[in-house]
View (cartoon, rainbow, N blue to C red):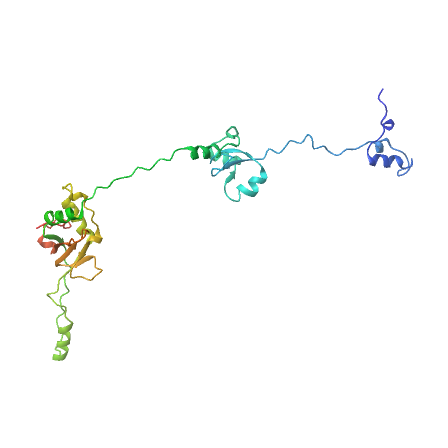
Length: 281
């Protein structure tokens, strides 16, 4: 038969103190319940924290590649990865948005970034392929520009009509009439045009004439090689009708620039269909 609880020797300090009290203290009678030993809840059966499920937003050596999903310590995620946006928490809604399930949760890759670095160091260096650009010598380019390009390059543009002078409404004094005559625009001045002929237009026209020649198509030519004569030093376009000289530089020592003439004609003298295109005379 099992011995009563009062015959067992207590082991905790609280029980020994209760036994040391005289019988009858308190409510006047000894209680067997007061002799029962109470223990605090044990932590041995509490499940260990498995961390949180995260998804990497970048490659992290010794942990895994970007988009890897696995469990990691809460402290590392809370204090390091989440503030620096290196990983995100995988909530239920996030699993649903990415079309993943709990079965897609993998393990941390402790070898990631270590073996790859060794393989890259041991790999032989491979030189990048070089592209050879075939160009024409300055002497050959000078000859081709002189012989294949016509002396006059014609462009057609629509002129801007000059405003007609207003008729006098009343008689004026000779002095006022002389002042108005000086202010009247010169009818012989070149007409302005809609649009302009720029150095880029010249380069495109010249390259179009050279494209059929093997050596001519290799000539390196840009707007910086074109210089208009008779305009301002930094002018790179013509804005009026007329004839203008230009120089095409090809580089090289002792080579003079190739000189040509650009003629801007009114659009009425061209074919009249759409916008005029440059044409050789």
